[in-house]
Length: 333
Image 1 (cartoon, rainbow, N blue to C red):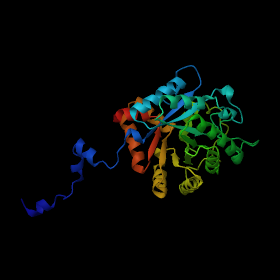
Image 2 (cartoon, one colour):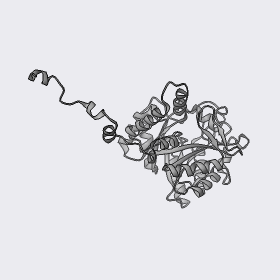
Image 3 (spheres, one colour):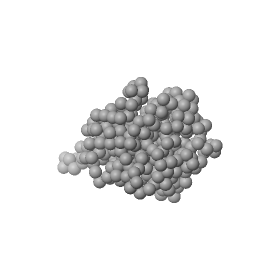
Image 4 (cartoon, rainbow, N blue to C red):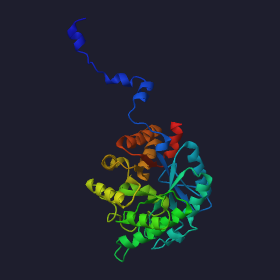
């Protein structure tokens, strides 16, 4: 065999490290485990144990008994935390979202029940008024429909204090009001809740991917206008870094990028710039698209589900909030 013939072959063949499962596993740059997941669930205050969400195949609204079972399941699967979001009885909604401050309401009652049943599972509570307001916005609105920043922040502090007193491990403001992280931190410290963590939805975009969630919590038909005056413009990236920097300075322990998959560039920029725990939220629209395509047989649902979680981790996410968490954990078990 001539030396010319031998030299025509590449010295490095990257496919050698792809030829079988064991070597692919050993050399994988990104590893996903159940510990990377936060299970997003919807709770409701009805007597029906489970109420399907039509726009999110496979997701049900859970009553408190079922939420307790979910917490126990998370503990068994090694999922470290649950993020819960409430579907509130429309009769309890008003313009001020006053039910959000009810210490015996759905959210604090669920927190207490879940922590009693699975004390080692972290409970993350949404801090925002949109599930509780008759107009579907994340805060108080004036006569022109503009969301009032400081007046809303004052209520959010009271909401977070109530959640912390009920046993929430992390309060997670998703409202995007300016200065609310600092106000929450001061309020928690003054209340003696020095160990209650704050997960800031620091880079939350005015996205079209939230539609199924709004159906799930019952705010879709109530929403007046849009949320572009307080959620971020999808065209902006540098703005996200300014938001995150402010929230860290004000006392956030963890930060969130939302939505997830269309914003992997933001996840990467935030995680590399600040080196703080950075979560990504695989939102309802992302979930619904995967499930709908899988039901049609157009994609391999379980494969795509796991692939997306891997992509979040590869982009730099410390963890992923997802409605797929239990299914991913079962797949990895």
